[in-house]
Each structure stands twice: as C-alpha cells, then as structure tokens.
Image 1 (cartoon, rainbow, N blue to C red):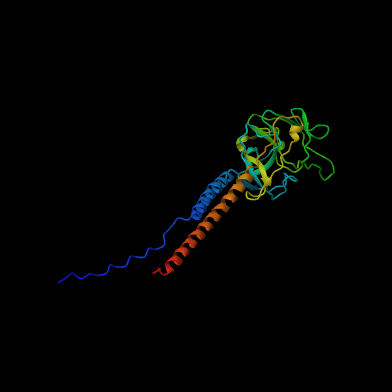
Image 2: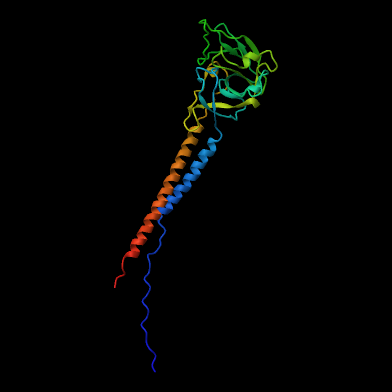
Amino acid sequence: MTETDFPAPPAERPGPKRRFSPILLVMILVAIVGVGTGGYGFWTLLSYRMVSVPSTGMAPTIPQGSVVLYRWTALPEIPRGSVVLMDLAAFPDAAPGDGRIVKRVIGVGGDHVVCCSLENLITVNGKPVKEPYTEDDNVYGRKEYRPFSVQVPPGAVFVAGDQRNNSRDSRLYVGMPGDGAVPLSKVYGVVVGMGSTLSAEPFSQTTAFVEAGLPGDPVSDTGFRSSRNLAFAGTGLVVLGVIGAIVSVVRSAGKRRRAAAIPPAH
C-alpha cells in the first residue's frame, strides 16, 4: 500500500499592506501644535478680566454700560493718567456691597495734588496738567471744580472721574481719614482695552502728565491681542489637524477595501 499524495493547499492571498500615511502624521503634528499654541493663548488671556462700567463718572471717555478689559500691572507704581478698577471699600463712607468702580489716577505716592490753577487745571507737584479727556462744563456753562490740596501717601493713588462734576472719587474725601487716597491693595488692575476679552480694542492711554513734565510712561499693554490671536490660531490648527486626520484615515481605509476587492491574478 502506497502513501497517497495530496496536492499542497493553495497559498494564502496576501492582503493589502497597512502603511502609515505621511499625511496622517502631518495632521497629527498640526493638531499637537494647535493644542500648544491655543493653550498658551487661552492661558495668557486668563490674566485679563472684563468689567461693565455702571456709572457715568468716567464719561465721555468710558460711557455708562461700557465693557472694559483690565489687567494688574506689576509696575512699582501705577503711572499717572492710568484708568484703574478699584474697590469702593477704600473710601471711608463705603457701605457693604458698594462694589468696584473705574477711575483715573491723577496722583501717585509722594505727589502733591492741588486744585485748581487760574486756568482751572489740577497741578501735580506744582506742574499744571491739561487733561483733554475731562468733561467739566456744568449746566451753568462754566467749569467748576471742588478745591483741594492733598499729599498722596506712599503705596497709594489719588483718583478722579473724567466727568469732574459728577463723580464719586478721591476729591470728595480730602480732609477725612486717608484724604481720599486709595491703597494699591484696593486697586484690581489697569484698564487696557475697550470691549470683551475676545473682541477688545486697545484703550487709549493719555500722555497729559508726561507732557506736563512729570515722569512715568503711560501703560502700554496690548498683550491681550497677541493672546487672542494665538488662541484663535491654535483652535484653527486643532480643527484642521483633526479633520485632516479623519480624512486621511477614511481614504486609507477605502484604498484597502478596494485593493481587497480585486480578484487575484492566475
């Protein structure tokens, strides 16, 4: 009895090889860069805050109801002319829940601020300051200020509203405890933009005090624009990378299915 010879089984047909798509790799890298870029942009935007201005005391510079963007400045002293967000608890007649208010710094620690010169201008350390942003004509058609003379203590600022005849500010408290000075601990930040975080435009900073011969450059902070652009760009890159990766995977899967459907050559 002889051993029966059986034919060898047919060789298995090799399936289409899976190859990692270079386009998929590029799309993944794009998404990773987008996460880093957008994350950094959003992170730096967190140092900016929005607040709505409920009063008319800063008109016409900041109309009632406007939204402003502010950021704490790490400068040793807040420059004269800056508009700041402060806590009303700094004033001696503050009531619980008075909240916060936006005012302009017209004196910093060590300044002697006086109102007014013969031209109805405030003087800081003897230098008259022309303030083009103020609205000070009252209903009688003439300029009118509340006279005061104050020495601002170190670590504090002296503030006033741009609407000088209708503003609750430091001038009202001269002669009371603290002489109306606002400690820097009661200042939340410097206004740097007009509008919400994602749409704010730079706030116009005055040079009136520098032009009067007083030291201290105005605050220059447009970092929120750069942060916002990075956040938007990063988000766009993530969306592009994810969509590109999905399209690449779908196309690769389609190619493998088509290759598998082709009958083997004999």
